[in-house]
Each structure stands twice: as structure tokens, then as C-alpha cells.
Image (cartoon, rainbow, N blue to C red; front, side, top):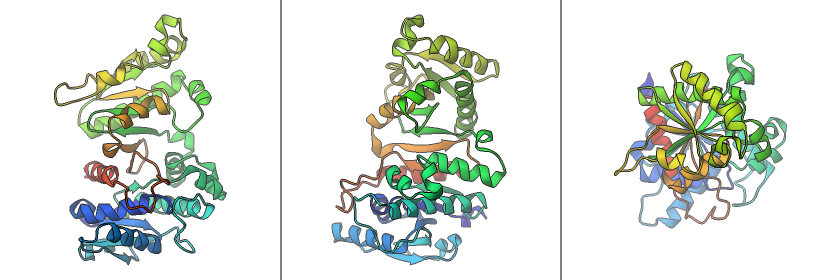
Length: 350
């Protein structure tokens, strides 16, 4: 049945670039998007298809078909985007404007797609970017989540009958040159520092070891970043490395996890970077907080970066950029990162 079970792509915030890059992905890479279904608003996707036709006048136009079941995508003709309706809007929103309606629609699409994957109707989901302010403005259940990761964690926990604490997840951002996994995700920097504790670091090492081991087919080499400059310089610039991070690494090693560090955070990413001339020393860097880990990967090239949620009982990837409200509706959005996320999902979902 795996060859007739689709991958789902959520439309993201309808006022952002998500629908446009989805349409461009279907136009530019039919082999990658074959059997993919968009979870979203049909009118929004039709507007996106029309936008792509406007900026690419020499290309055959895309059509959009409403599906009653995700599996119906395999019967669609070429250059046709299959949309499984969710998150319906009164009308396509104004590009580049934050609205509660767009936030609600984006959240409903995420929950619908997650439910379908958890129920076996789809192999995995690729999520287009959402706007966190719009999600919060939507109120209801969506205001409780700062982003995709936390919403999917809650949905999966509910489906499996677990508490959120019993289903820990982590964010991995991966590009051809560098991977990083984060101890904390969408919290303030002050909270992120407080989150650097023995249990959280050890849990991150365990999740990374298990998930990346499945991806690579072997035990991964984990390089662990320190929190403070120079990894604390022996306690001169902070004690977290001595009191929390190093003991967690030692405990992980005792479990057979190939972790080392803590290393100075301003050099460990360079050591892990893989290029044609020099293989990296580590398969992944475990970073202590959001920006510490994401800035290096994004600096190397957002067009190839893919966000993978580790620890979920469902497969989820996404591009590593946001809604780009400043260029939404202009036809200038680049679908490369979304296509990389689709390809990653196909690789992981085999």
C-alpha cells in the first residue's frame, strides 16, 4: 500500500509565500511532487497557481483539483495540484498581512494533516511556513502553541494516549553541509539558558542518537556545543558545562552514545561542517538553544535547509524559512527549500 499512500503538504499561512512555493514545486519538480497532496484552502491554491502562471507566461498552467480522499492524488493528470480541503477561509487573504483567520486556517491544516498521518492515510507531512503571531491571534487551541513542533507534539501525544512530557521531541535542521539538533526550541533566551539542565541535555542526546541512527543506518557521531563562550573556559565564564552538559555527555557515553564535548560553540559548527574538500568530524551538532544552532545552518544556505522533527510517531519535515510576508504575492519566492523538505520526507518515508 505504500505506493498509493501520499505525502501531505500543508499550505502554511495563506498570506505568506507558502502557497506560492507549493505551486512552484509542483510546476518545477513533477517527479518529486507526484503523489503529494496539499492540505489547505482550494481558492488559496488556485490563486497561487494563477500567480505562478503570471510570472512564468511561457509555462503550461497548473490546475487545482479538490480531493475527497488523499489517495485520490494518484489519479490526477500532470500539472494538477490535488487539494484535500482544510482550513477553509472566507476568501484568500491579503498578501503580507497578519490575520487571525489565516492563523486559524494554518493551524487547522496542520492538525488535519497530522491526524491523517497518524491514522495511516498518509506517509508523512511537509509543512509550509506559518506566522506565529497569526497563530496566536487565532485563539482557541492554536494560541497555546508557539510553532509547528509543539502543536504536532501535542497532537501526537493525544493520539497515542500519552502526556506531552511522555513524548519529548527535538528540532533538527539539516543541510548538505551541516546538521544541528536543539536542546530547547521556541522559548525566550532567558528560558533557554534555564533549560540547559542535565536531564534535558541527556534526553536530547538520546533522541538524536536514536533518530539520526535510523536515518544514517549507523550510530551517529554527536558533537555537543557548550552554552558559554569558550565552553565556559573551565568555569571562568559559566558553570553549565561543568555542572550540566559534561555530566550528560558522560551518561550518554555510558549508554553507548557516541557523544563528545562540550566544545566551544564558536568553532564546533565549523568542525562538523562537511564539504567536498573536508568531511566533518561529527554527523550532527547538539546545540543548547534555538539561534545557536540555526544561525550556522541558515548562513550556509537556506535554500537547502530542512527542518525535521525528531521523536514524533509521525514523519514531518519543513523548509527552514518563514512566511516572507515582505515578498508574498510578488512571484519572487524560491521553492528550493520546500523541495528539499519533500525529498527528505521521501527519503525518510521509504
